[in-house]
Image (tube, rainbow over all chains, first blue to last red; front, side, top):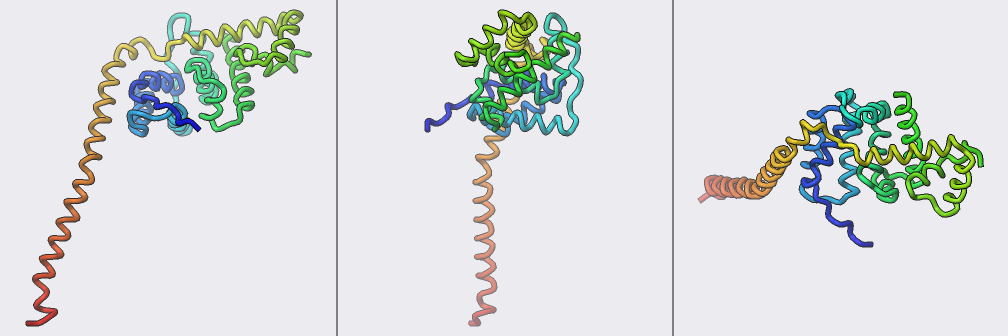
Length: 137
Length: 114
């Protein structure tokens, strides 16, 4: 089995910060999460381990109730971000990983440690929920 | 196939991961069903919007280079501390060895006479 290619952690700090911000809704909280990820992984990791670590830390934050309402976005993203924040943190993470971070289903299943079929169904349900919230306005 | 049964197939189609059989089923269905066709179109649109959506507010995005430098600095500082740690441990061990040696020298006459 081929070794996973190295994934530069510090170079992806912005991605971590942005992703964390969309989940926890606050820049200071997101910064703390991003810092924890970088200090835990060091400068290089693998892609799967990178996302697993980030998700684990975010889930711990969410479990402690450290999520705030996202500050009102402006522009055309406002409605989408508002709808996104009406989903659960896990649903938000799933959709962001699939669409914003372009993780394919195989990688996503490996990151989440779930069968691919379950991940497909979960993405489908999260997307339909987002559509409904978006249409409700 | 009825709309309720289409479920995951429609999602796979929207994501571009549907196999040929699923694509044929969905293609046939959306020719006749406006609501599923609409849902598919909205799914495409929402996926596009999620792909393009900036994750950070602009006020934070402009500070990103400085934040990256700061985190890089912290990582380097931690690496330096970790490199010094084995030397510190070695120093403590040597000190203990020297102290035990001196103690033995002092106490030797009491235990072995002479």
